[in-house]
Length: 414
Image (tube, rainbow, N blue to C red):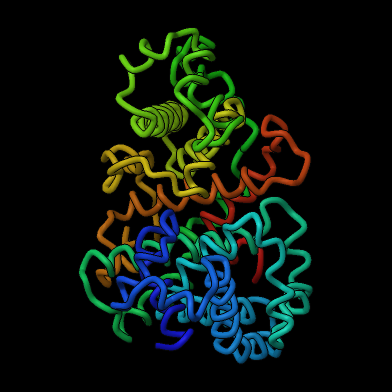
């Protein structure tokens, strides 16, 4: 048994539970050895995690560096971007365990302050590459941010289906994934650019601004849960804190929630349902499909801008992987908000979402679109400029995101 054997076993075992459980005992069981046998290689869990980081960066750089050099030599920005999209998609499609590790322990870990330094030490200068796209980073949300979020979402869906089928993806599946991902990023939904350019965004935004969020007040129990979670985080948020915030006794709180896990699950389910319902109200302000899509996107953002404590709580759940019990699959209406919008998706050939026609994904086209929009919206709001309050998030940024969703890079780069 080598150090690398242990690292690979930890990637498999801990990745299965998305790093909510990083027990050395589980790694030992996977390898069929005793726990003390692991200590002869790594003195503690932290040392093993460091070795896992080193392994990831070594492997990632070895795979990506040739593609990066090819991208930097490309004739134009669009070709350069496509080269990197293909390289990253190919790497993470073939390496599920490293994809999960990168998503959670590298890019999703707030303690991992710098990823460019370990790459530079291995001969991969991402800063030099990114300097070619400085104009794509200045606006909010940045196009690079939207591209990376799209890659993450599609890759997560790809590996989810792989796990469900219990099979390793073949070359044809990987090729189809890359082709579909390129289409998502380069043309978005492939809508009519002239129509998108002349849309009256201010009129549409004003129609949503007149809508009520509904009967939500300071006495709402779910809002009390959300505010406590937003302030303390889900692990530190106790039933006692929620009881005090809501004016109930702890025993009275248990009349509403069976446990803390049940309380967090109801928070997620209730608020997500409210967001979807509010987006539905916004969509009904127009009968034009392209306008309906923007109204849905704008309504979701508007709701979250007015409820920052909800956004913070949802982001805790998203980034910290809190165990909410069985939310897979989620209630059918969660991703159905755009289901009745009849979009003329011409560049995709009828209503086929790239990848759907190849059997890569089990979700319906409308559900895939909804998941994409919701994921991009949350990432846009959580990666807003430093110091900007949620309430101050500009409408111009929502329009940038809408343009990417409807036109992809084609809406910016010819």
